[in-house]
Image 1 (cartoon, helix red, strand yellow):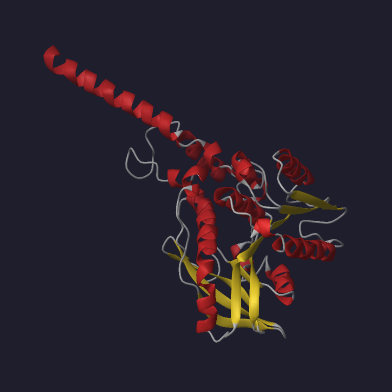
Image 2 (tube, rainbow, N blue to C red):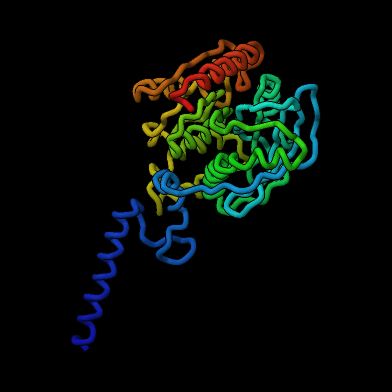
Length: 343
């Protein structure tokens, strides 16, 4: 019996050693994961390192029905795919022939019950469209006409990154979509692409800037900039259960994964883009100190960053700062797009 048990013990020990070494290589805390097969790490593909080394091919862009129309542009629904899932959004298209820079806009959180395509980006996107930009803003999975996101709460969050990355990769097909919909002579200069993000959309923008390392001139209004998961847990006092369910989900995730590998501030050093930040002092969603700290962190990393604070203004830079913030944002884009180092 001992002759049989001895090799089994050595075999078992070898497996444990192998699992321990795998743990070291993956940065996870537990080799057994409660999702998928016992030895898989299905969310590891979303680490910033892995996303950085993933090639996003993008998809075709299709343009749908008209939402509204102004003298100089039309607002339409558009569609693309991300990881095989349909994503809808709003695109503003100039009417006059010409070659236009492209602004990609990422909104913050909006409750499903009040969401319609364009909410959270509409006012800024219209302002940019009136000033000679093609603007494009995704609804994100689960919103508008988009397919549903993952049923895994953590993966659903990470899918915002892959959605944004696939949208940027799809911009190469935007001109064909315009031509196919009768916008003849309207061109998209994707070498002059800029990014705008508000609130959690600012978090998505910072994440994309780090992952891609691309020099997209970027404007952030009241961005969520703290490390994950604090950036999520901070808002749980607004939940019906005060965040109990979400804290459990995050705790389970932290048992199996190194959370720092999924946190944007760990990778701000990868950012190569010029950034302009706007923050109201009376913002009850994103504290002023977050943007203070973000600006300081970027300056310490020798990033090209500037920062404007609006006394008495809220999360949407109201009641006084919106117009100044938009004017500064527009000037920032125009200035950077004329600088060859950012193209």
